[in-house]
Length: 166
Image (cartoon, rainbow, N blue to C red; front, side, top):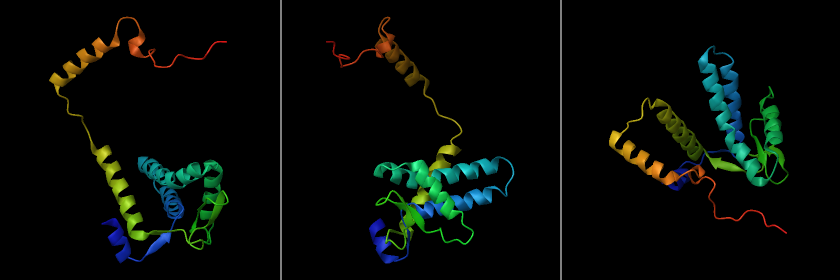
């Protein structure tokens, strides 16, 4: 289904975390205009968007903090020329993802951001956890019997034998 929709819509966006960093920059800039708790929420969402380029750096074995700082500086340029810059796994730095043919289908990126946002909103909207008293008492008894007597509740038991002695 996703592949079919991506093939129908030929619109692409820059990959390598470029779009994620640009949206993050925009949200951080917008958050400065808002007072109160909303500013914190928007900044947290912006930080969450930076997970994609950070994970790309970690997977490629690069220093994620250094690369993200370079990306933030490039995306902060007033001219807007840094909007397409993302993680370059070939050099360990940043590069124009669009010019280097690192693309993502726009519809896939939009759906991914929408799905992640809806999941976060759903989790945050849960006010109460429904508890079943019968299952709680059964779990409590099982946990107490599994602890054993005076052995730290099985925390110190293991399969290994520790370090070898010479």
